[in-house]
Length: 611
Ligand code: G6P
Image 1 (cartoon, protein in one colour):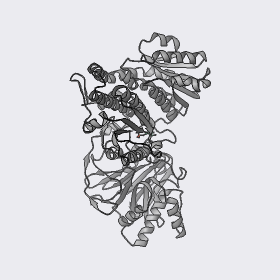
Image 2 (cartoon, rainbow, N blue to C red):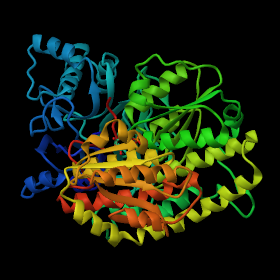
Image 3 (cartoon, rainbow, N blue to C red):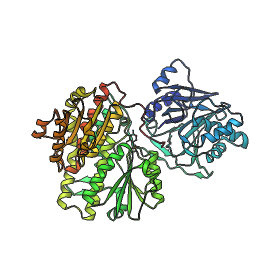
């Protein structure tokens, strides 16, 4: 939510910032802006996409070797030119970019207004930079000290970068709750919300921690805690490849990421599954396996698609490891005074590792004594650093706002976890274990077989692209997949879609069915097959238009459905890894055919770092 990029060094800053903002645009795309320092401190900003800012600045001379850039997802104040970042301080000697929410900005704004400060925008961020100016003026201290003192009085979350006319080669950055990564080059430094704007210049990065302030020049990074204690930063080496964050010939990141799934699922299993040797290992689980084996209950936390992966995990842990599971929306859990007992283990799932609600829910569970296990994709992000142990999903960078490969990677890791725990508990037999290992290794090729049917799914998309509503129905392991299918469609095509357990249809959604209602059934040959066949009949009897995701060679479904998308047979517990793929492809094509911006759907952001 909001992307931050900054540069100080020997290069022209504008192209570095512009390219960085394009890479970060998935975090917000309501407006974009930059500030460049070259004697003067100039701010340029524009409502809309980064490309709108670029066109706006086409004729402008923009020479500078230091600057900051921001792409916004609006929280306080409409998306417009004035509310766009950067914001000047009142005397225009400072400019700020900010990601997060300053919760007490109203109180601060009132005090500053009483002192004669005036504000141009409606944002909390402008209040913060005015406040820093005011603190410096009153305390007669250095800018670094003023930022520190100001932040002590701020309630809320922030990642900020401040640039000052009085410090022509220095960036000041601080964070609490919102991410910031420093890229360490030779004679240059970068700052960004994540590593994607940095990796083409350097793979050495420092993750700024919460409540730290960094003072960065082209040659030096100095980091102190908010309590003014110097820290020794640890320089990590990134393994990310530039190719992983480019479209590589695909029209959209989402399509590229859908097609990457044979590889990303394989990457999630790499070094962890070996059917021939009977091995299934998750290094991060080793020290805490006993906790899970003896867990009285598992509580799973997540938001959006990650929550859906959690629902799949509920079935897995209950079926194989025989542990009761509750799957919670992190946003509800955190405000509910939830009961955490000794012996409960919490699993937090997050692609970005930065979702504010999930982070807060983790902190709450920790304060109640829970052991927290993280399942995250972005290496070095906040959630893996807040958890006791965890496993990365290794899906590679996911840039399309609608999550695809991250979901299948999460389900892969969670399936592995459930099976490891089940084996350690003795709740599955050796033959079940071996069968699952073999099937894990078959999954990537089976995903590829579904991707090869892409054109058939595109054809179905064309027929239903103008539908106003969609229903997605599944049972058992395919119920969370129905939810995920509906979420994908509504996120990117703006068609109203609902996912339901198929049997629940009778308790409401059946009233919606008429000859215009497309109903997507996920009816693979598994333990609830007979039941879902009856549900298909019920929809047909009411003239609903039936599309079925079915197991290859299912002649019965073939007769009943208007359209069938076949997927290969697999172990019932691993079906979500296959059955979700056609739904991703269907949503993608419907959205493209409706002219929607697939990678940047309206109002959404990939990484939701505000609550
Ligand atoms: C946003 C994204 C979703 C994602 C959810 C949770 O809503 O648009 O794709 O599932 O956040 O994000 P996380 O990074 O915690 O998985």
